[in-house]
Length: 169
Image 1 (spheres, rainbow, N blue to C red):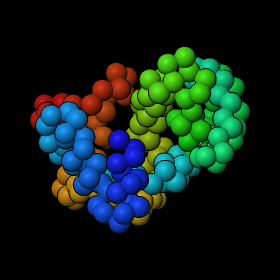
Image 2: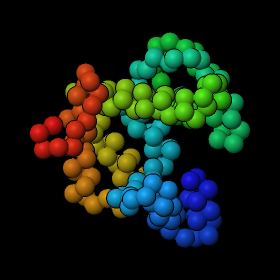
Image 3: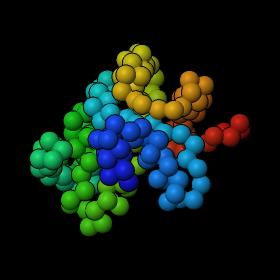
């Protein structure tokens, strides 16, 4: 899937649309929308909220010339800035199940980040976060779609870390 996007970009084609088309072929139904997020934006958003508290399940030794990511993160409770959060969510070499382990950590980290981002202490940072995202995301979502998802994001159940897209939840 990554190759589809990058090869289309190299040809000057609409990479996001080609990726949507390929994923549609793979899963058997049409993809509704896309959002391409600049990875620097991920780091900038984490930094904008003052970092994310996260319990690292196993130590991370990141020495990746290809991605220009180099760090050591010990296991245990950590306060991660944007760079170290990026290293954590990009790391896969040390997990027995490689990409699957990375995906699990990514989901867990994003849940922790969402919980901290929707706290009252981050209300002053909302404008900065919106500016970062607006300048760093390519999407075919409409402004109404984005408002809908943002409103739902703000209603994430902090205890259960669940999100409902129904009118009741």
